[in-house]
Each structure stands twice: as C-alpha cells, then as structure tokens.
Length: 202
Length: 202
DNA sequence: TATTTAACCATAACAGTGTTATGTAGGCAA
DNA sequence: TTGCCTACATAACACTGTTATGGTTAAATA
View 1: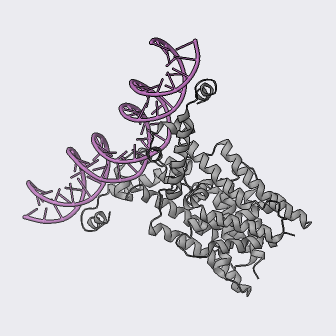
View 2 (view 1 turned 120 degrees about the vertical axis):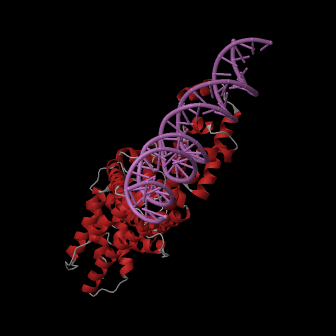
View 3 (view 1 turned 90 degrees about the vertical axis):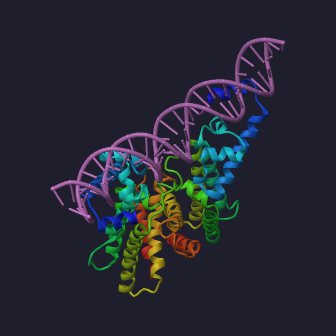
C-alpha cells in the first residue's frame, strides 16, 4: 500500500480511484448500519458497491482498513457527543455531555460495539484508528478537568474521568449482553449512576 | 440429536461416548485458556483431542455447544467470586466480593471476554447458558439486597446492584479496549469507583 | 504522435472457517 | 451368526479473507 501510495503521488492517478474508494466506503457503511460487523464480508461490500473485492485491498489494505474507517467514525461520534464547544463546564453541562454520550451509544449501536471490541476478535485498530480513541478520551478528560478546576476540587483528573466513563460504558455493555433480555431504562440508570460519581467529586 | 439421544437412552450406550465428549471439552478448554476464542476452530479442537470434528456436532451440537460450556464456566466463576457463603453482608464483605469479582475478571480474561460478547459475534448463548448469567446476577443482587436490608436503606435493590456491576465491568472493558495500551492499576481504580457507588447508598 | 509502462479492476485460486453428507467398523440384540 | 445401529473418520459443501493472474485503460516517455 505504501508502494501504491508513492506510485500514486508520482505517477498516474486515475479518476476511477477516488470514485471506487467512496463507493466501497458507502457500501460498507450502509451494510454496517443495518447489520453490524457481521454483515461486512468483503464479498457483500463489493457486491453492494457494484465492484469486485480487489478495491478493498488496494484502497483499504483489506477488510481491516474498512473497519478502521468505521472505528474512527465511531470515536468521532463519541467526541462530538461530548464536545460542548465553548460552553462552561458547569455541573449541568457535564451531565449534558454524559447524556449525549449515552444517547450516542444507543443510537449508533454498531459503531459502539465496534469501538469496544464487541464485533470482531480478529480486528485490531490501526495506529490512526487508536488516535481517534485517544482524541475522544482527551475530550472526556478535558471536560472533567475544566469542571474540577472551576470548582477548585482536589482530585486526580484522569481517575475522575475514567470513573465517569466506566460507569456509563459499563451500563451500556451490560445492557448489550449480560442483561440483554431486560427492558429497563438503561440510559436513565446509567446517567443516574454517572451523577453519583460526579457528586462524589470534592 | 434428539433422535440420537433417544436412541442412546433406549439402545446401546458405548463407553467411547463420554470419553470423546470429555476429550473434546478438555481440548477446547486448554486451547481457550491459552488463546481465547480465536484459538477454537473446530479443526483445532478436534486435532487437540486426537479426534475428528464430528464429535463436536454429535456431543455439543456444533461449536456453539462448546462455547456454551465455556460461557457457563465463565459465569460460574463470577458466581463463585461473589459468593461469600454465610458471611454477613457488611460493607467490608461487599467490598470483598467486588474485589473478588475484579480479581476473577483479570485472572480469567478469556472467560470474561466470552461472557461479555468480546469474543465471537456469531455466538449467541443458549437458554441454559443464559441461566448461568442469571444465576450470577442473582448472587450480585442478593449481596446488595442483604447489605441494603441490614442497613435499613431505602433504595432500589436492582438499580443499586446494576450500578455496582456497571462501574466494575465498565473499568474492565475499558482496560481491554479503549485504554488497552495504558498501564494503570485498573483493578484498584475499579474497586475505588465501586466504593463510591456503595458509599452513595443511603 | 506513437509506443511503453503502470495503475485499476474483474476474476480465479488459495487456505482457512463451520457444517453437513457419506461410508465403515465395531458393538449389541435377536 | 446375522442384521441393525451407533460412533466416528473423511470428504464435500458453502462461506470467509486474501493473493495471484490477466486484461483494459490512462498517463508518461521517446
């Protein structure tokens, strides 16, 4: 792929290249949204894109590259959910960011499952994909840190951020698997538990 | 399989039957402990057992049955971790059960990943396997309920139990995936966060 | 401008997966 | 002893991700 990219930079780009890549990504995204990762065989993607499978290898370095693109999308959605812009990090706004996170988790279930390893044991995120996770985590830590600084609290910012994240994510994950058959107000319960953690910050 | 079982009950049990089943299960368990679910192809299991693959279908109804057996093992380990016998459900003992849970989660990673869907998207636990999960959950609810009753607390026992579970499991899951590259005292952090939830019970 | 070269892509082939089909050997009952 | 049934090995099937092969087209070079 590096050889191909170098050759592309110096030699003969063809108009069909970007179009094929977009078709593949669009096909993969549609299949993914409707069927999760298990709907993403390379043949299904190729067929849905109206192409053969070879483009998945030349454009995405294989199925992994398609999953990376979706993984990055997933963490970008997490980032956006927690991004409050320039709003001050008040208690209510931190709670709002948690609410947004939980909303995202339940609205974009396929993405959520992918970024938390509930989708494909053979998938290992690339370095670039991991960066998307790091970026989303930094936004979480940023929110917590601003709130902590604003309120002159003395506690470990990293730990506090992880506490908040763990309880929310734990609820989502349990509702996916261990208690999947129960109809409970999962998002509300998760938010309440997050408030418990937040209220313990002092 | 029902036909085979009926025939077995009425006709000719063969000594080789139980021996084959045990060989397959032992082979699967060993592969699983060393390589997780991805090490469990039916051919690998059969080869390791010194048999052909057909026994996996006749004894376990396919690969799913092998995974069910391991899933049940996993939740049985969760049950045992949280089982304090007849000990009174004091604060310290509830904390101890949480500590045991986290210890189990990190010592039996393959099992833990299996029961929380981090292993094989095509695996769906059988009704029997789900019962093992229910049983472990009931032990968690039992512990929380006894503690709540002992301390005359007024709160939702189910919610309280889930809060406790969510924060612990959330930490374990994040340490598996989202923050997998970080070396942090995950079990200690999870236990501290669990104490925050516990301390909020009033 | 004509020829050569490289990129893109369809298709075939490969090695692996879980599962089903087929045939044989051994054990048990009549 | 014969016939039936079960357990099991092996082959075959349909699917998976990936690599190999060859044809067409576009870009570069002479």
